[in-house]
Length: 502
Ligand SMILES: NC(=O)C1=CN([C@@H]2O[C@H](COP(=O)(O)OP(=O)(O)OC[C@H]3O[C@@H](n4cnc5c(N)ncnc54)[C@H](O)[C@@H]3O)[C@@H](O)[C@H]2O)[C@@H](O)CC1
Ligand SMILES: Nc1ncnc2c1ncn2[C@@H]1O[C@H](COP(=O)(O)OP(=O)(O)O)[C@@H](O)[C@H]1O
Ligand SMILES: [K+]
Image (cartoon, rainbow, N blue to C red; front, side):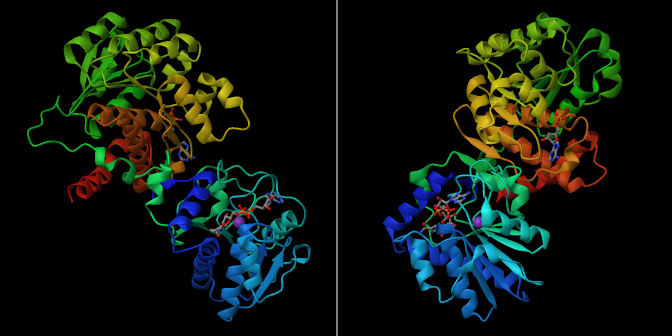
């Protein structure tokens, strides 16, 4: 169920389902309407009136089916239409099968105690909602009428999650077969309320032909690749992570990454510290290995001797001009041995001043895989043109940036998007604002590095890290600070190990 479909892919799913039978278009529409009607009856059994607002397309068609079924079940139904469906469409058939006569939408006023079914626009929304439909949306909002949206809250793009003008705020959104990106990307997600995916008889095997490239993030996407220690494992075989610390006044961020890497299963973690920060780092570390690394030569010695599988560069690293040289040199030297480098925070800001050299380094034939973890501000610095394009959704921005940088990207925020240069992307849905606390990004980088070091492919490692990070925060609950996150991973990891062991 974790695949997300674009409107083109969903139309293809409909077509393939119709071609393979037994349902034709109107039968799929009857199934869709029946699924919505069942949810209305279950969730709002005492509604005084159910208003059904039908648009001119097939989303409206679903509405006519709901009206017919609810009326047959004895519910007081009030049917409204913004215009007759196009002749010959499935919606026209559904309207013809409905015994109720619709009233013009302009007269719609929600009655007290009523519920509204939003069947105005779904996948076919092509511009901002105006006129009677916009007024109907506003009236539902003013009267605080509970709304069940069919497929998408009208006014929200299923592709981008953007509001193309006025948009319904639904309590429940019932979509069909699979969710769409707009159900998970903000602001769309906040307009959906609870999203329910209903089965309307489209067979699962149409997905093999569609090959979706976008997913809702969760264990189904990466559990297969999730590491499990082998019986004969030793600490270096479990993956060695190197984390670079900043100078003496900014060491905490790297230690958070290091501790998170250790908790996320790296067998060994080395903190590479400038000489002037060794004392302060030593005072705070116990199981983490501490090693002096002043400049590139000492870092290169560490790479050659200890052969770490993953590196974290950026948290607290500083933004001086020599840091940029250092990062480029490490990327250049890491190919071959290091499976992946996580570049976060200061590393992103520094590379934003030298994008040409940076992208040349990440695109080099023998470059290690790079994972970039920008928040909105850092994304804008490193990818200013992509960030400034108003037509792109967060999903499209993440994909374009991943391609440009030849790097996997964790584009952070309430709807974190993970994107791979090969076009795959995942949208995270278990985020919590509890994560908006200083240092939580440093922890995320450490978790991702640990999973890369344990041989997870980088896109899967990045996706798993984002999910684990959020899940740990949710379970810990209020009062969370970044220091709590590494230990809060424990119950989440324990549960995953159990599921994987089954
Ligand atoms: N057999 C089928 O085709 C099925 C269709 N389904 C439903 O069909 C929907 C998609 O149907 P459609 O492709 O007809 O699209 P919609 O019903 O979402 O809307 C398209 C219609 O609205 C017009 N329109 C779009 N934006 C507008 C705006 N802002 N102001 C005024 N008019 C606007 C378009 O010109 C078109 O006439 C899905 O969301 C789903 O609810 C489901 O019932 C499954 C089966
Ligand atoms: N409102 C929010 N809802 C969900 N997740 C959030 C929210 N705000 C921030 N986060 C998450 O918290 C983390 C913050 O990372 P970052 O901005 O790098 O912080 P820091 O630099 O302080 O470590 C990211 O994983 C981000 O996705
Ligand atoms: K709708």
